[in-house]
Image (tube, rainbow, N blue to C red):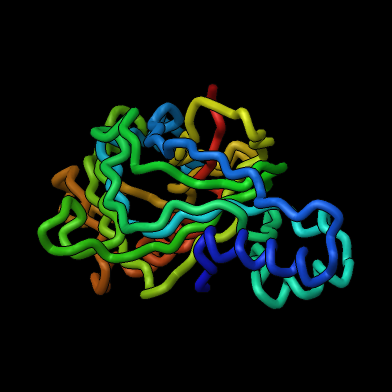
Length: 261
């Protein structure tokens, strides 16, 4: 879904306020904060089949993170009805978090090496001060010259059960334009806020307790018993596992934005 640039959103609000004879038209307060890669929650997890899964590399390609304020905080005034025509609302698919009006953004394409890039800034996001509820972004496929080599994500690690360890590489491709909507971003951004926004990936859904790797039986998928497993697109023998992993990877359960001073 396309969103209007932030300067157009704020200019539109000024025009609307002037047309409706608002008492004191003024530009909305903008806050600029860096969006920082945070790998603090990439920790070993145990899936529902008893495998302890450790990620050693998490590389993901995405674009255009946006930040949303809950729609219900706005009244249905004539001005709001006109504003809704100019600034479409974004609504989350069914899940833990709802979307709302987009009032923050960091435009651009990013290929994130979540562990290697720990602590690095992706750029400066611009937000209108307010109570935020969620964040959205779009998955892409990185170029052949990037660390994802023409794919959306490459995850590497190991899975251990009953003393046996299987190393794995999981390569995932999201459909073009696949948007993730409703990653939790429950923060109040004030006009004097400082610090940074931390972009977090986690293999654990901390709300429900399930993991990205639930139902994946690593040993059974390792048909040649060499303790090395590759799960890739269009690989018939692991198609079911690939589909499960891609579906979970594309949900908001494994991504969070936190404001840290």
